Image (cartoon, rainbow, N blue to C red; front, side, top):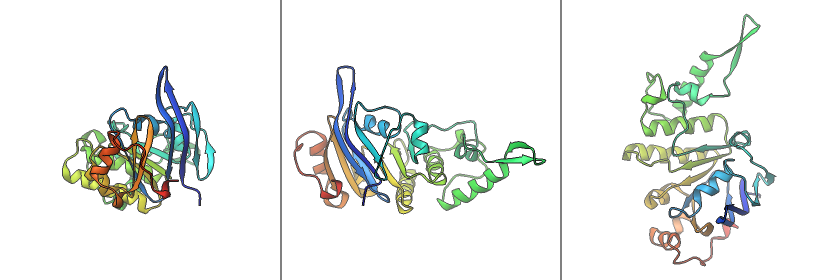
Length: 256
């Protein structure tokens, strides 16, 4: 059976600097695949290709076994690829519901003629969605600017669930969060996977990575140098590959 998402031979250079060197990566439906590596390893460049921010110089991306060209973030979203970036691209002065439906607002006909945004539907479906993910977002919060970092993450994840994303990329989702909020975001990542979504989870905290991930892929100098089942690796092994001490060890067969 074809993987949900396949990256094969991805190459990218910025001027004279080669950033990605033939990257191969697979993501299965219903799994959390953690992507780790030191600063400059190429993680951000790789996910920005999947998210439609960059176009590759070579290689191929396949979704459900079919080659896709992802030229813009909008095209990625249309294909079912949602990204929760570190900067949490939310509209601070809009409500939670308005952020979830931003750009895709439901419309009703006033007097059967005039199209207007269906605010009642937005409110009711937002309430149901937040209950579904057991969110801690207070109903009285008028705008997302008043939410904590973990609550803002929940809004982004709720948006991905509502729009039936196939792939969700979570870029450092627990950075600067308190312990309780971090645990809730980890639970949300696992919730996405339990509903059949493929999750790519980028992080630096290896204890957290081993807790949330089904598999872990390590990048070093623009290449994937290790893929392991999370239960079959350790912090020590991951650090060795992240720092270049063990570039040539075999990966697990599931990643092939």
